Length: 309
Image (cartoon, one colour):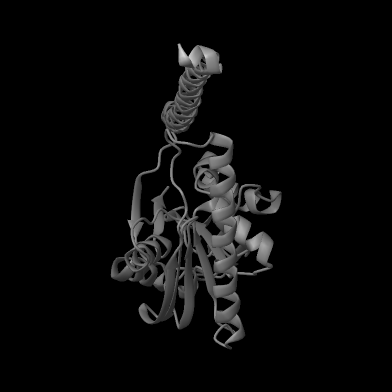
């Protein structure tokens, strides 16, 4: 009775209505947030599936190429991954071979093979020149009698064209860690740089950055998540540029080869944005903490694939 007389009853009813409306809007907001989070997760799942399918397509295309090669009778007789003492032994054998004047051809084979290089290879290999092109970029070593024909995919592939000599034109520093050099590993969340004397590491610096991983259900949208992650990656790459600049400004880089390896897109972005001129770059798969990841990257980088044609 008193509430009605004082007008409290209508106010309480209005409060109840507003609380009910507020609860309804809150439920709607939570449902919408859940829907967007589900959509973002579904998008990530779809992207991962697309990546897996693209990998599978690439694998099947490779298998199809091998089938086509098999049907044409062109097959690689042997394929091997070489590093360390085993690689040294193979290089020793190849460099010990002697022929008559201009009897040993060493040719750099790139994706676009110059006609002059292709003509020299075809003179000796015939149709098997296609096997050398499949290995590109590589070095092809073949003698004029056709007794030996191999391709090598070294970490550093020089631009030597087609070179005819009485021995194969191979330099050990294209294949093996020689003298003082540096290897820098770059991922979107990690940097590690080692300075080496031959294959022994004599200096090291590295760090990790806090970069968000895959987006999952949460209180912010996929777009905001991606903006945050892109910003974190930019900050990480800035740290990488500063670390490399400090290495170079310290006088250590003078005449010292620098090999930049890691995730291909990250390596390319770092080179483009920093003005670096590394001796060579390579895509390698190196996971884990900085030091063991660097060790894996160095192992992968200094590996040469041998194909016996």
